[in-house]
Image (tube, rainbow, N blue to C red):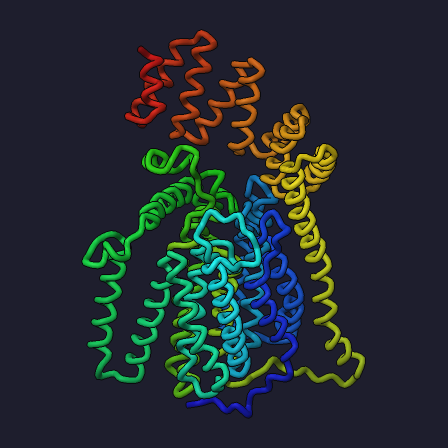
Length: 615
């Protein structure tokens, strides 16, 4: 049964919904080329500000509503609270608090980003009815068109920003072709599946018809195949559910075809089956190493994980020996490349399970939406769940990128909102006899939003200044102007005094101090970094090399042995350790080290040099 459009009252909460949708588009599109990290930090700032304002609406709603124990709203709030609470507990146990709070360098998947996602999910669940979802779909059309055009500009070498980009040129506004490909694929699913919906409007369908082939072409040129598979799996899932609920006689045939097709495609991705030579990429194999390391982290620290967004600091300790032998001893990874394993490995079992339960909750309500609706409303329900499935599919092999992940969380909220609000039951309008009480209720939301925005803006301003400072230090270091060395020293001191500054930025600035001739200051700064983070391999390597140049062999050996504990399969570091022992006159320990290299890395240049030293 179609819901009555007259029953929708989009104007009542129109302003707050526009905050959500404009925040979604801004988070996706915005980047700041003057930042050290022009993509992730810029998007985190927009995300935090958006969620900061919407939090007042969420608190206002639930403070005024009576939620029964057995209601879906109760279980949504419970699951979101548990996920956020368990993340908070893991944050407390994260060894480097600032990393757990704002996230690792070039990632920003810390506690604050997921707290913001929870707020956005809750807001969408309580506000997004059919009319607002139509508005969301229309915003998706313009976002897809804009990203497709920008992607085509990058492909044709017409980008207005001269990126220092080691990847394929089609990075869109996300900074990486894999993320760009996945987001465009999700948008293609939305645009393609909205074409049969009558209430969308022909104008938006026309734009969709233009944007879809442009987006698919951009995905193809990105050389990132995950986007194409997201589209295929999303469409197959849509067809499966459509025939299952609308054509029962054909559901067995369609289901069998889709399962076989999906199986062949999946096998091809895993380098087996008839399509392997067409669709397999080596990047799939390398993910096996990431997943294996994540599983080992979880099994070793099952309760609270290794720390929120601290995957990189532990990866080399847990990676399989085959990884460095195949890809290089210094190559690392900052993420499990699987969102679910990332949660388990960095947050622990409670974070991982609560997240999976939340996804299951959304999926069940998505199926219910399809079951109970017909016509346009069923097509909207099918679209939302299919796009959501596409997002979850890419999450199996990809990283949570803020500009991409916000779509998954808002799609979750839309699915729940369609279920909660389709009957157009809005939050209870409490009646008061005294006008002053009514006014106090109407002021509650903006007051709460403003109070939450104040610390949010302080953190955001801090992030903004830190990014600008690090970018400026780098630019000054590459300049030949003599006075810039003074600027490097001054801004490096400011960066190190900032308790919210990215620890890696402090380390990078210390390296630039060496270029400015401030070696002693650099040593003090790197020593402080290692004191704060004993697992910082960059600082350990720097101090080991510093000790070697100063002729302090005992200190060099101490640093290199610490590196070996955190990075046991690094043959280059082991060779330098063996040489340090040899220079110290300790031939016995030197031989043990050299034999260790030969044992796990035979045939490598380090093993050959180690063999020569033994002989």
